[in-house]
Image 1: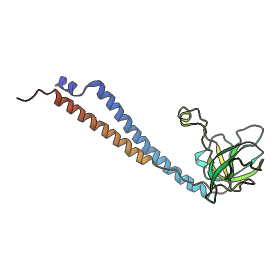
Image 2: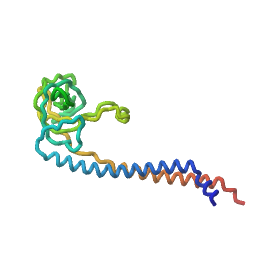
Image 3: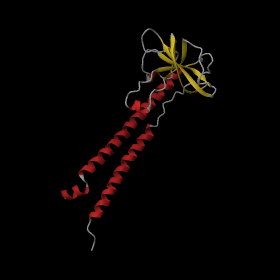
Image 4: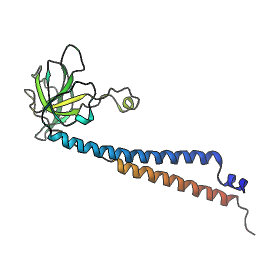
Length: 216
């Protein structure tokens, strides 16, 4: 009987398939936990939207618990302008101008989205001053492989300015939402695990039938 079972369930392939199925099931449960975390974040963002104006806390990494709050900060000097794709409050697409702001002699400073222009070569006439608006995370820099390898720096807090810099259009206000597709991903991982197990069992049965001696 023991020999029959070993022949029916070859050790190494069975271990590999079992490990793959266990990994997929673990990923499914991880996505379920992420779904709960994202639901809690969504509630936090909705509460933040209604909170009063605050001073932008110092910090080099965007704090998820503060996203979409109204905040203000003083930009002593614009050290650099960056551009990304963006959309104006009117719905018009264009180039978004992001100011790298210095807040003192030391420290991480902050970044501010100062508006959108249909002209990607526009030169904003703004060198610093008071900025107020909603806190979001700055656009991630680096490519996908750099992010996966951990070489891309974490996003800093960015204020989407209520009032644009001279010569720019006001940016479209950010949307306070945490996209929650983790439940769908969890279902997919559980389905993949069940499918892999079923396919392996069917393959073993087919293999066993081929080894049976012909009748008669």
